[in-house]
Length: 191
Picture (cartoon, helix red, strand yellow):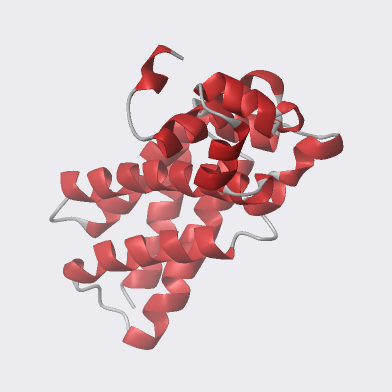
């Protein structure tokens, strides 16, 4: 936790929450432990992040931002080929997911209070889905795919949901899954 002295107080608290969650599980994250780990008072924790559910959402949304940076970088690397950009984005996101300790802590939690985080990635994932779809829509548009505008939204929704499903439960290597999803996306986006 050496790097936690950098950034804002809020950043340090969220980083401490991620560290505690990945090392001991979400149930072990209390405001008192969090305050101690971040080197602040319990009141400061409440002032900066609010309730424990609000903290959970903040952790997930900040992690989502890192995943979306991976998507942005993949599209930047393939400016002339939408299919390759999608393939790279999917493959890179799934590779990043494999090594993501917070994601593994959330997905592998199967008992007690630890399951509080899982709905943020599944049944209550609307803000996560909307943020991801907004980034993907914005990155796909410049390629001017040959698809009716009314169908671009459901096509984007499909790709984002399928990728999220593979993040949660991979079925093949990131490269194979990226190639498969890109193949499907190309057929849909070609109209």
